[in-house]
Amino acid sequence: MEVIAKRRLFRIANESKIPLIQRRSHADYESFLEENVHTQQIDINICAGLDAGSSASSRVGEAELMQGLYTDNDVFEVLKGMRTNAIVGNGSFESESLSQFWSTFKSPFQSVSLEEFRIQFRELSPSFRHFGMDDGADVFGLMFRFECVVFKLGKTDSATDFTSNFTKIYSKVDEARNVKLARLCSRQGLPAHLRGSMWDLMVQSDMTQDVGSYAREQCVPIKAQIAKYSLLTDRLILSDVNAWCKNDDAFFVFEDMLRSVLLLWSRDEWVLKNSPNASAGLSGDVGDRAGKKELKICGKWGIPVKAYPPNGVYPFSGLSCYAMIVSFLHSELDMVYMTFRELYARYFHHLHTISCHPQSLPNLLVTFESLLKALDPLLYLHLTQHVGTAPVSFAFRWIMYGFVGVLDVEQTLLLWDRILGFDKMELLSAVAAALFCFRRERLFCAQTEKDVNVSCDSRVLKE
Image 1: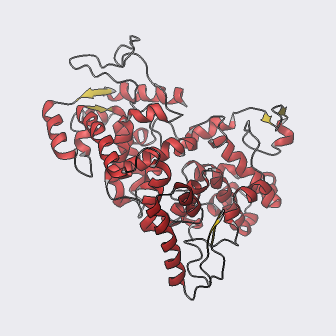
Image 2: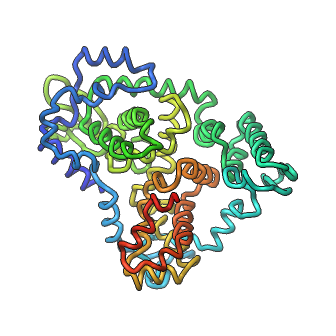
């Protein structure tokens, strides 16, 4: 994917005549620092450099900017061309035809079987009560079992009592700042008003106890970097946010927040050091590629950066979806960004990266196929052999974008509660398989790929 991204980046730069990196005027720099360093939003016009070279940028098609440096279709085509053997328990290799029969994608790891899944995710059993799902049900007895610690609520007389009791337990865990119990709570869903605090506890407590102060300290120097120079990739990011937010009633109100979060992320060298998929990107001088140790812009102002983009990750179509997941957690930009940064380095990068990691996108797709074949082999056979389409070609985008836009916002957040609680990405594969089983009757009526596409449309799934 890096080769595709570099090629498109240079093509956009050459056609638009916009430099990859450009220092701002002193007036813009001072204006930015005065207006943005301590605010909850970044001035888009200044940070994107849209006030300069706008006529040149019009030479590049709007669709070219919106698709980023690569798209989900690019990732899908690369995945379809993968060829590998599966690794069995003793470290030897097993034939693809035996371990991954009828599979569209190949993975070097054995996928999680249905039996293993039931053991690893036993708290998802119907015998456990879940916040956000059982709120309106009569609840008898059993609630939480935290290893040797048991919270027992007894029978509740109403949905209000049920929610109140859950919230009391969660509040105590949050006050205790106990990461282990927070993860166990998260496995059964979190109330909206505690979700931000609990997520931060699970992903940031190992760095600091005062997340607010830490977030502000981290973001001030990054905002200063935005004030100093503009990047061509800023335009790609802003176009992606606009494309994903403009037609979404749930997220369009967060458009300014999402832009600010991703602009901070694009310049954060912490991502380059801590995200496994980040690389130095372009090396040498941007202007003449002279092979110097640091990347520099030619001309009047030299701007040394260690990589391009500075965070080491090329923007792609759909990047905004990951920021959308955290946009409901906090109202402060710095807090939203820090949560997003940690989640990207721990989880989100797996969803668009092709690697041999057990929780990488290829393995999640293979796990999806394995679970669907185990849950409903007749449906899988119907779709692949009779209709002639692979279920994974539809589930692929659901998984890659973390179900943003597929499920309702609250359902998406409840899903990610459980991903953080179990610290396992395979839940995305399980939900994708469950959605196919949920639409079983419609899918069995499908005779063409178009029929399947209609049944798997996100608007239909939300009904």
